[in-house]
Length: 198
Picture 1: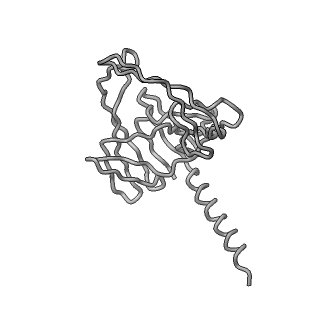
Picture 2: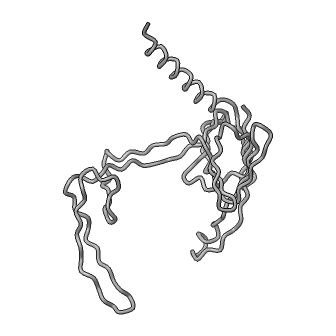
Picture 3: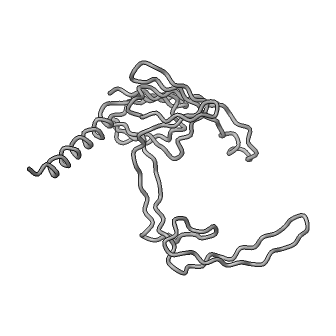
């Protein structure tokens, strides 16, 4: 018997059903501005940019260092990058070409910290996220300095338990969903409460 293709097809079907079920349902959102929305097919997504590696033999721009206390200036240096390097060297600016691609992927977990310990919680286990924020003193001039916050969260889980973190940062994550008026994209920092209805 040849079970290989049948097993692979079944695994693909089950995995696809898992992704679809994660997107099914609705989410009730309340923003810090006081808006309330009901989104269908909600998903928490992260944006990213794929930058191609520098071509072989590309030279970084010369850099100059200055030692402020003595006023001594270092010599300009040029560094060659290695072909296939994982990370471009400092000072390399990738050209804006058709090879640079924007992308987004669904976030399947949320990482929260409490007392220096991190916990990664699957989003499929979360029924409600309630964010809290505290203003942070910033050295940036207004209005940028007025909008700096430290975020924490409380997660209500499907088993009835609750997890609280005093720090959370979802980076570039946004909540995407649809309303009768169309697609809505909300940056996670604008969300006060997010309640999933699965």
